[in-house]
Image 1 (spheres, one colour):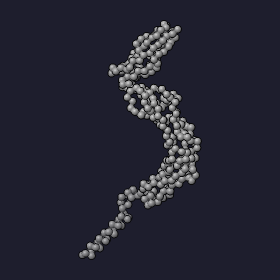
Image 2 (cartoon, helix red, strand yellow; image 1 turned 90 degrees about the horizontal axis):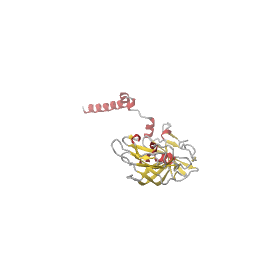
Image 3 (tube, helix red, strand yellow; image 1 turned 180 degrees about the vertical axis):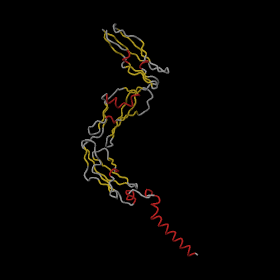
Image 4 (cartoon, helix red, strand yellow; image 1 turned 45 degrees about the vertical axis):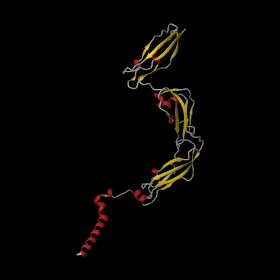
Length: 288
C-alpha cells in the first residue's frame, strides 16, 4: 500500500511538470507569457551599448546644436534604442563643458557616456536694464517684459549674441501692499542651462480696489480755435467685475477753445455697485 502511494505521487509530479512545460502557454494564450526581447536581454544582464563620438563637439552658437548627432545605442538583442538616449550639459560657467548621455534600461540600470563640448565666442547670458524712474501699474506686471522691452530699456543676450529678451522672467520680491518702490528680480536662461540674474527697483502703482480711472495727461495746452475732446484723454476706465466702463466716465467743467484761459476738468467714475474711482483732474490752457 505504501509503495502504491509513492508511485502515485511520482506520477502526479511528472504530469504536472509536463503541463507547465507544454500546455500552460496554449491554455492562457501567448500574451500571458510573452515578454519583449529587450526586457529579456536586460534582465539577463546584457547591457545596452551606448556609443558617442571620440572627438569633442564645437559649437559657436550658430543654429540649434544637435548634441545627439553621432550618438547610438543598441540593446543586447541588437535593436537600435538610440531614441531613448537623453543628454545634459554639465560644468557651467566656462567654455569647456561635458555632455553627459544616459539611457535607462528596462531593468532600471543606467548606462552613461560623456563627450567634451567646446563653446566658441561665448560670454554667458546677460540681462541689460537701462531704465530708471519708471512707474508701472500692478496690473501690468504680468506683461512687464513686453512693456520694458518695447520701451527699449530691457534686453537679454544668450551669450552668443542672440536676443532672448522674450525669455526673461520678472518677479516682485515682496507682496505689493500699496504704492511705492519694490525690488524686482529678472532672470533668463539659455539652451546650455546657464542663467543670468538682475535685481532692480521699480515704482509700482498698486492696483485699486473697485473701478480704475486714469488719464493720458494731467495738463494740456491748446491754441485758440483748436479742437478739444475730453473723452480722448481717458486712458483707462474699467473694473474687475464690470469690465470696460469708458461710457460711464463723467466730466465736470467746460473748455472754450475760442477764449484764452485756464480751464479745469474733473473726471469721475463709479462701477455698477456704486464704488468710486479716485477723481482725475485735467488742466487745459488755451493760448493765443
